[in-house]
Image (cartoon, rainbow, N blue to C red; front, side, top):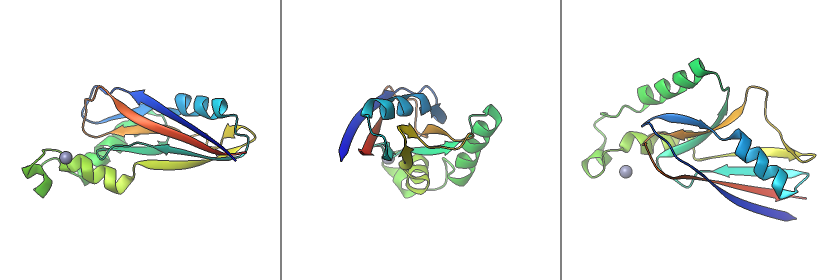
Length: 137
Ligand code: ZN
C-alpha cells in the first residue's frame, strides 16, 4: 500500500472565511500516484474545520452565517474567560476538522457541487495548515 503525505498551507484574511482548497487537494492526489484508495483531508487546528459543498457565493455566505448563528461569539462560553475564541472551538468540534474522500482510477471522487473548503472561524491567520494523506494502491 502506498502512503502519500502532503502539508498544504493557506492564509486567511477574515475572522470567518471559506477557503476553496479543491485544486490543491486534487493536485496532491495526482502527485500521490495512488489509483484506488482514500484521501484524508485534515486541518490540525482546534478553531478551523473542513467541509465539502457548493462553491456558490450566496451559499458560502449562508454557511458562515449559520456557523455564527449556531456558535455565537458572545455565547457566555467559559473558554472566553481565558481565550476569546470559544465559538471557533465549538465550530471546529461540531463540524469536524477532517473529511475523507474515495479515490478511484487516480481521481478523487466528489459530487459536482462538492468543492472542498477549509473553514476559518478564528482568523485572520497567516498560516493555516491542511494535511492531505492519500492511502491506497
Ligand atoms: Zn481558544
